Length: 269
Image (cartoon, rainbow, N blue to C red):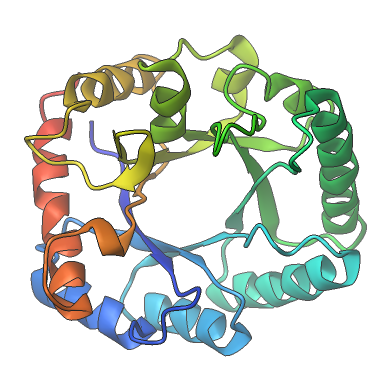
C-alpha cells in the first residue's frame, strides 16, 4: 500500500498546541512519512493558518467538521470559510461530517435528523458550487449510546448520490471487534479512512507493536487494499494517549509513529 498518510490535528480546548508546532514537528521528525493534515477546529484564524502553512510546506489540507456545529447559520459560516480556502489552495477540500444523535437511543430519530442535516449541507454546496466534498463518517457506540455506525450508515449514504464515505476503522473495531466487510455502497463512496487503536473500549489510541488489536488493524488494511482504495489514510490519535511528559514530546512521538505504521503498509498487498 502506498496511500498518502495524514496527521489528525484537533485544537479543541488545547491552547498549548499551535499549528506552527505541528508543522515544525512534522518537518523535523516526519521523515517524509506525513503527506498532510486533517484538521478539526472552531478557531477561524487557526483554520486559515493551518491551510496556509500546509500550502507553504506542500502538505495536503483536509477538514474534520466539529460535531458541535449544527446550527444552520454556523454550518454555512464554516462552509464559506472552507470554500475560500479551497479556492486559495486550488483544489477540492474533503470535509468529514459526523451523524447526529442524542441520549434517547432512538436510531430511527438519529437517521432522520442526520438526513435533514446532511441534506442542508449538500444543498448549500450545490447551490453555491462550493469546492468541497462532504464525507460522512461511521461512528461507534459511546457511553451505552448507539450512534450511526458501519452497520447502518448506508441508510444515509443511499439518500444522497453526492455524499462520500469516511471509513473509521477504529470505530468499526470498537463496535464489532473486527473489521467489517464493506457494503457495495460503502466501497463505491469511500474517499477517506481514519485509523487508530482501541484500548479497553476507549478509542483513538496510537498504533504500535503492542497494540492488542494490531491483527485486526492489519486485516482492515488488507480489506481496503483489496478494494483498491487509493485515497489518504488519517492516523487519528488522541495526543493525550501518546507517550511523553510534555505536549511537545507527545507530538514528536505522534509524528515518529508514522514510521511504524508505514512499515505495516509496506507488507500489505
